[in-house]
Length: 310
Ligand SMILES: Nc1nc2c(ncn2[C@@H]2O[C@H](COP(=O)(O)OP(=O)(O)OP(=O)(O)O)[C@@H](O)[C@H]2O)c(=O)[nH]1
Image (cartoon, rainbow, N blue to C red; front, side, top):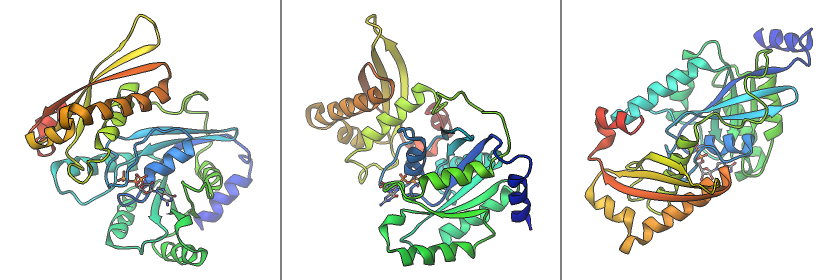
């Protein structure tokens, strides 16, 4: 049995060896992949929200331990393609699956396993070389017995290398999960320097934080109609103040009004919130300048998608 081989390898001459590799968390939208990534890395790097499908870029977070390193590739929710954007997302997911050492399949504790979960589980066959573990997320939201039932239900889907119940919010089993993941990684040199928690460019992170701030409070009206690009980041002569110039793209004129708010009040809030978030990552002082623009139906137009970084 392959499990035994893996166990023997770990207990053999390589026991205690440094291990490092790539892991990605997959699962339906909203199951808690981004929150889990953030909790493991310990710094806010992927955007989270209570609305599905907010993660658009493969943001990498890096977890460091004395015995190993995990490079987390945060994938978008896997879906059957609907809009062109959905199709691109799927391609992105496929590319990512082929590259990783371990795939973590996430299902929330409180929801029965449905067709969406089964569809994603089937997609994992496309990555035959990756180790596969199952995670029951949001474990603190249901009684223990129900977590047990969910563990059992997941174990029926395939032979997993491990099954772990976790809560990113209540810090349940996060260290156990880290240990399990490192144990499944190949013996390797560290892949990144010890002080690096993400390799994402600062620009991309700033754009995502602005997008998150811009979505705040208007998710009902424009959940998927927002894209953000950065024009320029200027360091002032004082050496600590950064000016971030960004565009917020909406799909229709009516959405532009929502975004700006009465007398520009909403846009001001977005600028201030985004500035505070960006500041908490890079320190110093951050000033955000936003330009709201209309890019008609950008989700369906390949040219626009390219321009907006998808
Ligand atoms: N109670 C509870 N809620 C959680 C936990 N982890 C995540 N959530 C919540 O679940 C919602 C979705 O979390 P995300 O991390 O954005 O989910 P995701 O799977 O990355 O979603 P997409 O980006 O849409 O694929 C948010 O409201 C989180 O606060 C958890 O451990 N416990």
